[in-house]
Length: 344
Image (cartoon, rainbow, N blue to C red; front, side, top):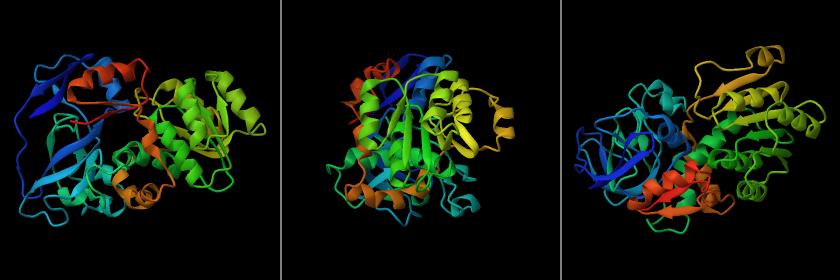
């Protein structure tokens, strides 16, 4: 079969690789019908050191189950499923607490040698705990939005949850990528009264407004902090969604939170240390977040997609086949595309 491999920064190739097979009785083989390129894929695209074997890429997918191991009980061949970006057994203490990304037997697709979803098919470990069966056909018109349940919609929702978004709250979203835009959807869905998007790209700002953003801040650094405070009566936002992961974005997120507010960090950190430690401490700002347990959120978010109340699939502004994946990476890295969908 064909799959995407990254060999070093900027070097993405489509190659023929061995077909996936059942390795454990809890595995499933999924034929990928939709995948995508994630903003977090751009970090290795810009910085990955040379690998002789290459890393299989992709951690978001919707597909059809082709084969299951002897101990799989909740999915069967023919099921249309969404695959969260992390696999989890569904039975450990952390899975029971709804924190599937901390599963004691879990891991992340398309990372550290694990197979990826930018491919024609892949093996899914712990199929019962990982895969979620969708009540639609594989070519349903809602597929773009359903695909976001594998990562960006659930991740934006996680940022909103841990930053305590609620009715009447003021919310600021740092980052106008797909996760930030889905964070706007999540904030609106949870009842926020004011939603400020921090971003500079006109197409993304227009989509943010469509999703529910009430204000736009295009400044950066101290100017952005000052502008958000102006928009929030001088205090800052109750809830801040940090959806980038850089030192500056994190410092800005903490700086625009009001005293007693909360920051939800879901941008993959690119620095070992977190900036603005004293700022958050002296303002009693809660800083939380991490890899979103999107598997725990699917059941809650799915009805809103099926019934048309939210349309996170609008973050996809380009579709490619497998051969077009390298160009898809370049388009996202150059900010010519918000998020690229892959149809193998």
